[in-house]
Length: 398
Image (cartoon, rainbow, N blue to C red; front, side):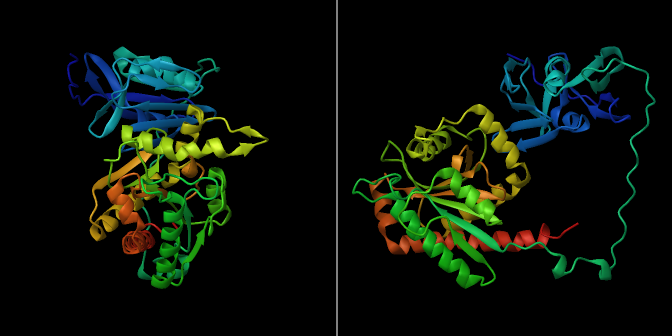
C-alpha cells in the first residue's frame, strides 16, 4: 500500500542557465518524496509537450530526445531504453507529476540537459549536459505587457478568418483488401464506399462552399500511407476515414469514433486498430512486406498530431453525438488507438467505425440503404457543427 499524495504549498525554484531566467513550480509530497509537474518543468526546459487526456499519457520532445510516460505506469520510455520510476507518475490536480529524482537522473540526460537539485534550498538548475557550471548573471523572466485593447474597427473581419473549405473522406479498404466480412458475405469495402459517396453528396448540398474529395471512388486498392499523403497533398482541413467494425465475437456491437494516439484507450480499441492495420500485410515495398509498426513510430505519430489532437477529439465527440441521435445502436463512445491510416495526417483526423459487420444483426443494418443514409447524415451534421464552431472560436488569425 502506498500512501496518497500530501498536498503542499511548497515551491521549487527553477534556475535556467540556458535562458538566463528563473521561475517556480509547485511540488507535492508522495511517500515523503517530492514530485513536480512534468509539463511545466519540460516547457521551462524548452521541450515540446503533448498531453493525451483520454489515455493520461504525455510525450516530451527536445531536439532528438523523445520521452513517453503515463499516469500510474512505472515504466517510462526514454526512446533508446525503458526505465522504472518509483513512485510512478501520478495525476494530481489534473497535472502529471513525476519524482524529482527521475527529473535529475533520467529526464535531464534524455533531453540532453543537466538538472541539478539542492534539496535544502528547494532549488533546481537547468544547464546543457556538456557545459561546466559557470557563474552566470540571472535575470527574472520578462514581464508580459497586457494585450492592447481591440476596438470594433480592429476586430478580425471575414477576410482575416481561417475557414474550413476542403474535406477528404477516406472509404477504408478496397480492391484486394475487402476489409471485414459479415456472416452473410457483406464486405466492409462496399459498405464504406457507399457511405462515403452519401456523405460527400450531403456535405456538398448542405454547404456548397465545401470541396469534398474521396481517397477512392471505386473498388481499387489504396495503401494506408497514400491515404493521408493524399489528404496532405490536397491541403485538407479535415480527414475522415470510414470503416465498418469487426470482431472475433459475433456479439460485439455498437458505433464508435477514434482519434490517433500512440497508446490505445482500452483493449478493444487496441484490437480494432490491429484489425484495421492488418492491411499492411497486403502492401508491397520493393517486393517485400512492409515492416511492422514499431514504438518509435507510435511516438513520432503522436508528435505529428500534437497541433490537432484537441480538434480531433472535438470532432470525434460531435460525430458520436450526432450519429447516436439518428440511429438505434449501442453508443461505444470515443476512443483512441494507433491507426496507421491516421498517423501522418497534418489536419484534424478521425476514424469512424459505423457498426459491427461481423454481428449478424448489425450486418443487416449496414446492408440497409436507409441506415447508411442516417449514418452519413449524422456525420455530415457533426462536420458542419464542427466547422461552425471552429470558424467562430478558433479560425481567426492572431
